[in-house]
Length: 252
Ligand SMILES: Nc1ncnc2c1ncn2[C@@H]1O[C@H](COP(=O)(O)OP(=O)(O)O)[C@@H](O)[C@H]1O
Ligand SMILES: Cc1ncsc1CCOP(=O)(O)O
Ligand SMILES: [Mg+2]
Image (cartoon, rainbow, N blue to C red; front, side):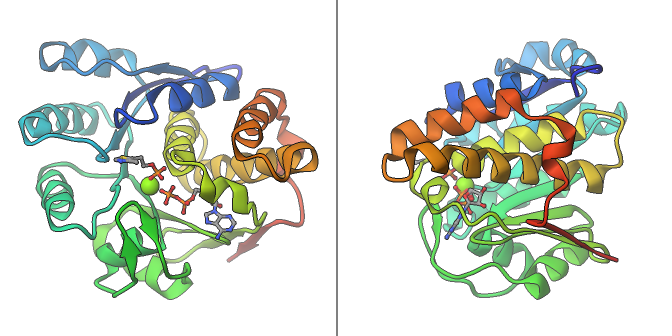
């Protein structure tokens, strides 16, 4: 990451832009959050990956997402999709419209959002999942979409339909912070923008946020806002060996 410094073109939602941009930068990549249709070619030429967060996407922006995704596909640069609240019908329409025209390399969502891609009923309340993550659901979503799946929750599950990894840091204060999921999607944009294997890159980003959250909880276990800042601070200090821990479990 720190040698390659990938540029991530991140179409964030309007709620969490600063937090996501900082997280990408602290990890060692370089965010760009611009969204102008006339500049798609310029930005996608510059970037190594792109992240589509659908949290506040308007219908008028759909052509921007499709053009950017198709340009990324032509240039063989990964598209990461964060289908915020996809269980809400309009959000589902957005995700479906984009996925019909763009090949998505990775989908990162909570248990309910990933359930939507698998055709499994996992209850939700707007942006939040009410059910738990499940490896069967994650694998099914990977097989149906052809994308790597990162299903976040108490335990994060990463799968390409065959390989599975679990990241088990149990950071409940991450779930309290709006935008923790968006941060993870941004970090996935950063790691998939390197020349590492995409599945390993997905595990690395997920483990990085888990590790950073664990560091923060040692200082701010009861203060959600300080906790989130401390999590981002920990991302700034992370080293490769911090990701090789018992909380990250690989299955063949
Ligand atoms: N119940 C939970 N307990 C501990 N950590 C959680 C829990 N739910 C989510 N997380 C962590 O919060 C981060 C964001 O995931 P999540 O809340 O599922 O995404 P979103 O914000 O998109 O709903 C992930 O790093 C995940 O590991
Ligand atoms: C509150 C809100 N409303 C639309 S997008 C958004 C942020 C969602 O962030 P996350 O999915 O990471 O909780
Ligand atoms: Mg989310």
